[in-house]
Length: 453
Image 1: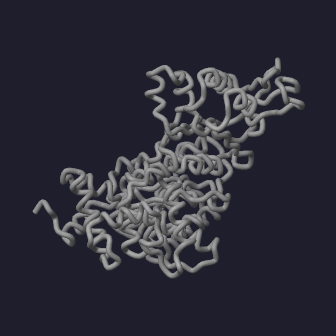
Image 2: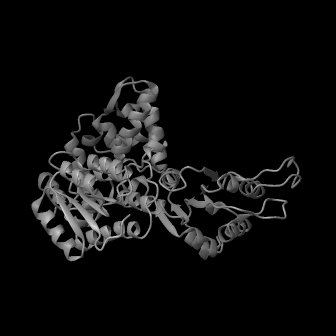
């Protein structure tokens, strides 16, 4: 990239107020700002010259911001694009991140946060050559991370930020939340995506077998070792190794893993020489490793070595608004696999799904929908097609929510008021948990009745 006195910023937004403010702010910061009021005009500017970053609104008068992003990725794949979203467009923002957006900012936004986001996008590009662009997750055969809850959106953003680094990552979360899916997404979005992704469950093997599996063994190292085996670390060389349930490792295995992290080399079982490896470690656990460190059941030095970047996957019960998104996704997938045309869920069935606590998290929901697709006679999934636990929830729910005649407004109204009650009447916090802007939440209360008035 050519060195410039001022970083160049392309601003695509049809709102004169927002555009004028951002132009003024960034020109005062020393940026060379070019503004466009439509997606087509912005693409034309990008064809004419290179920019250090692009700020693009997701809603434009001619084409949406995701379409602009796709075209910009084709024109200049190394150019970072930041999407600006308004209320009701979080799903588009998530799709944009999946298709290669650098980040997104929500309107109304704080100017300092927009400045910081643009600075993050500009700085690495002006210091070093751009890396090869990462493919989107779908093109790489990895199922997308789904959910519009604010915690999931922030997690999704962090995944894409950390993917391009070499830092070890520790993914924390309950069983069934999708920790391996996150690990695979990190890999396919990283510069190592052309190399192997190797997953191993640390719970499923005894200590001796785990050591041999990870580090390999030489011939004659133990009974049955009739030939040399390189091990999974060497199999994953220059790629990523995913250590699932790393909290179940013994202290002696933890010491050996720590040595690999520190020295970047492995010693096969029964061998006398070490072999250098270049492997990125992504680990996962459902345990509280911090508490295990305090109890001296997990090495403190290994804990901090692996937890350079920590990602927490929230359980499904903390984000009930994501249940319809996930359920519809699984319904479409299993319907297509079985060759059956199933259009959706009855209101009663969806209400039952949202009322359930989901101890098995997303994996349990996936299994429930798979079963429902197999059992439903066709057309739509009803309460009777759900699991016994779901039917029990429906039977114990208030009549107006458990019946097939419950209106969607009833379901939404009760959910909104339950969230507000859970926050002690804090409307800002309730809006955050629901993943909607405050103004939208206030309109909901006007529609459904504000219990505080």
